Amino acid sequence: MDLSAPSAISIDGGTCTKDGLCARVCPARIFRFEKGKVPSVERAHECVLCGQCLSACIPGAIAHSKLDPKDLRKIEHPRPAGEDALLAFLRQRRSVREYRKKPVPQELLQRVAEMAGYAPVGAFGGAGWIRHVTVVEGEEKMKAVRDATVRYMRKLHDLMSGFFLRGMARFSEEARSGLSTLPDLKMRLAEYEAGRDAILYDAPAAVFVSAGYETTTPHEDCDAALMNMMLAAHALGLGTCWNGWLGNAALASHVRGPRELGDLLGLSETHRVVEAFTVGWPSIPLHSVPYRETSIRWVK
Ligand SMILES: Cc1cc2nc3c(=O)[nH]c(=O)nc-3n(C[C@H](O)[C@H](O)[C@H](O)COP(=O)(O)O)c2cc1C
Image 1 (cartoon, rainbow, N blue to C red):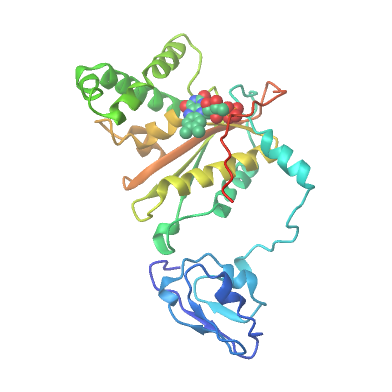
Image 2 (cartoon, rainbow, N blue to C red):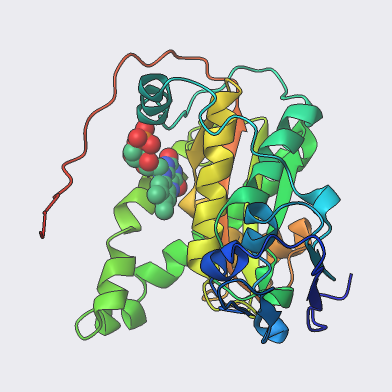
């Protein structure tokens, strides 16, 4: 399907119940509704492909050139478990940094990856809609990813230890913030030299999500997709750990030299955000979770 072509949307006057739901749910205000009349379609080219009109309307009343009703997943159980169980499930996600030496079946990784497609996106439709999920699995490929990540981290270490960035840090908050990660970087490289993988934690698989320059909200889109996938993994009994080093190594636009990991993963050079997490079977059961102080204010 050509996502860059404008959407064509039409309403079947015979099927439409004239309730105006399409106009009420559409975030791009494409439908104009007057009581008792079939809504008119006014700005179809502004459609953001959210599918809310098709989800609210009775089947068959709206035809959309880019959204096939057959591809819409039915919301059958709005709350498939009790609310306490669902909230407990959300509370119980933890970062997992010890994995069993057992591969994750591809079918499970596929189910995790597909959940990215249900996360919110801030960009308008078309090409900006697209986030790219890349799944790496198997010892050989994971070793290649680890080696490339270590090379990136070593380069970054040298850059951070140099005079230039230290001088910059006196004037730039960004440089100061970057430099504050140096102790963590040093620790992980030292662990690696000592034969312990404190970077990928010997995980059997890793998942990357990236977005290109077409979208206006690549960070938010990738973060939302990443969190969806991590929760999906949690639901399947898998453990994950969000991995900033891995994501940065894959992007590596701020370090001179080849985009080694980006090339290995086949990421486009136009991708401006790459987020990543490791995934595998947890080997240490965790019994508790801290509540991280969150300031909640009411304005009534
Ligand atoms: C943006 C981001 C980057 C992270 N990068 C790493 C990382 O490189 N290595 C790691 O072990 N954990 C990483 N984490 C995981 C955090 O350390 C972890 O979420 C935090 O300690 C809270 O623990 P919890 O996830 O078990 O609740 C990252 C988390 C975020 C949000």
